Image (tube, rainbow, N blue to C red):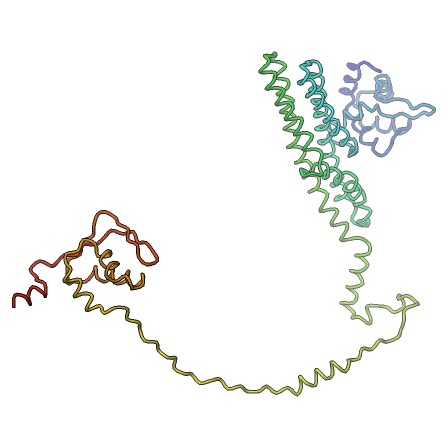
Length: 425
């Protein structure tokens, strides 16, 4: 393995050459000597010798010779480093992402066991493992998102003369093999594993921070737990966002590929010919299968349908005269009490402190609704003076109890009762 400083220095000196080799490595797993010279001479500095550049790259192990061959290949570390800087990642496997997510469960168990047993080493190991898993999952999600965006752009910018099923073949494969499994894993319901595992890890880290605070642990240890909990929370949010972005990027292309496959293209072309030339000239009989039957099928109406149609044709509606309007009998109004006699009795009983109590006592046989009607009319009568009391009172009628402010009735000033006038005469 070459020294890191030497490798980084050669990347700095010949970055354009290494970047071009990284792009070509998608199509060519190995490079022969002629291709190496062609790329180096095209992208090297003008004042640099091509053989010297090739020797430097080989000595720094950026280019590694392949066993039993004269060809060279790029160092895998260099490929990952350059693709990470240029945002040109290869799409990872959903199984690797799922395995890393499942590993969070074991790391969370280590954190909980360290808390229960007061084992700081086990707690620190579980937390460090959680941090490393979160970092790798975040990095893979970011790289996969960039790779999916690049796949979509390549599919959109491909030659339109190529059939759409060939242009979008990689899009369909990526959606079926990566996006759908990732959506199932990211499901927040019972079927998903991403959110429940991260939620348990977050709860375990929060509990660890609280317990370490109560035990009086070092501030650096509590701060490390809190920072890892923040990373887990951030991963839950970014995982959902990245899954939505990937699905939103590939789903329209997938639907377009399904709608414009070869069969639909042929059908659309045939329908256009029928619209332009008509059904007879648009469909050529020579293209039909030879085993097509020429027998004509006839449909005949049954006797039941014939009889029913004959009845409909001879149907004559019958006229039904409407009955004449008859005057409805008018029911006479019910007079429950002689109001003139009641007013005379009330005038003789003045003054009264409670009109409702007097009515309930003297006319108990009347319905409650009639008693209430008489009460409201008598309080507004001009024959006496009506005053509303300040305190409420409750009176029990036949079926209901009424709570109200009683009206007090008095004789009008300057008037005399009828009975006193008769006695005076």
